[in-house]
Image (tube, rainbow, N blue to C red; front, side, top):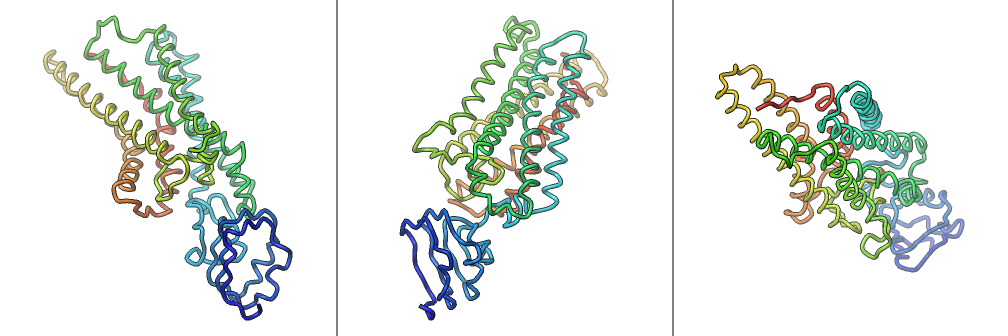
Length: 373
């Protein structure tokens, strides 16, 4: 045994590794342990494989214990995490806090403004409150993930499996999905309302203070269903939909095929893309109508340019958020599993997704749009 250089223990239903199991394997270079549900082990045993060059297991934890490079070990590490920390990059860790606090405080301000400082309630102010509530929840999600990172600092990999399969992770994943989808659909409703008021300002079918709450009840019920369905026990999701990453995010922009990835594609790259395209086309059409109305009325172009700039900001923030995500998703599907760098995944989660949640309070509260035909 002492001269053994390769050992294959894969698919042997191994649950426990006896203490000092590495004894007598001082020359081992290749070890296969995948296909086992190892629950108990001695961490020091893996560190004692001084000549080990290749290790194949079911968990990256053992790669960390063996102190092997990513190239020499399987599975590959989480796109966001390292052996020590949930968020491997310090700059990402910092911006997780920054964007989380911005989204939370900015949207709380927006909610308070529309509840107490607006004398007359309007459909727009009510919709903006719903939007702020949705975006506020994403701020809560980011702060919670940042707190978990802080809690497991330096020892994350030891608790990675327990964390990703915990009820807390499933809850945060559900919260993130609910928040992002609610934000998208509320923006869709806001756009529909503005489009109808410009094209049919006197129509009886326009939203009213009474009907807006009914519409939002339908929207939020739909979003709750979208976020909660993956939690229902089934052979399709296998209870692992929100445990695919350390941040409990279900977005599919990697070449792995975890349980429920088609569902994630349908929501993130289907529903959200359609909503974005509608918003883009609708604001383009609204600007055209406003421009033609201004010319007919003989108004100067300054008001027209002000509206154009504000419309551009709305479309631009949506573009910055969803276009990169959908582009990566479409490339992933079209090119048969292209490899998207882990850094891109990290930046998507920390920088791209929170854009709307952090900036929407500025666009829809601090800089209110007033459309007049």
